[in-house]
Image 1 (cartoon, rainbow, N blue to C red):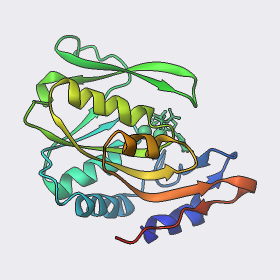
Image 2: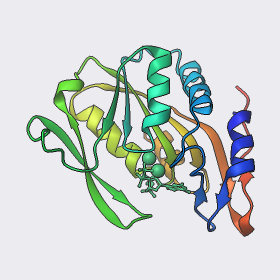
Image 3: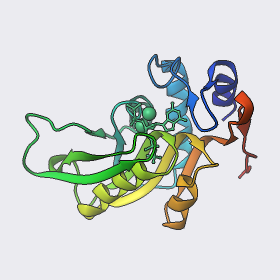
Length: 194
Ligand code: G4P
Ligand code: NA
Ligand code: NA
């Protein structure tokens, strides 16, 4: 997605060989016009799927997820990383390990908002090792619903998440794929034109 590539080139800050800071449009300040286009692009790429729900994880997945949900006119659910006071029973729980943070978190979704008939599109802002996306997929599968696909705003394709998710049989659509972050430079992966 050229618009997003431009934004990464103009505003992305390479913090290290494996971390890209994009807090001016995705992770802190958010760009609603760009997120609207992101939502359009995801809805286009998954238009062959009968999607009934969008699922993401708080907090940075919420903006691209809600814009996709708006485009498809379906509800959006975000998994919580912290236990809610009012969300105690009837919840789906999965453990998600973060290599970046070296900690395991429990993510939760209320059973009220997913059913076995659902076709769920998973959306997230970043894809690194794929732990968050796999955790979300396990939540969907726990209730007997179908994962319709996985939409990622920025994939770091030098990390294994994208390959692992594809090997597991999921359709992964990443709007921008970064091949390397060496020497303070962003190198984009070749785009496969379909
Ligand atoms: P994984 O799910 O693919 O295995 O990723 P990982 O555990 O490494 O990611 C932990 C957190 O770091 C996630 O955000 C993820 O979006 C973010 N992240 C991973 N790589 C990058 C990167 O290169 N740049 C930026 N900006 N973020 C990255 P989170 O802790 O869940 O935070 P939130 O922003 O969603 O609240
Ligand atoms: Na994030
Ligand atoms: Na995220």
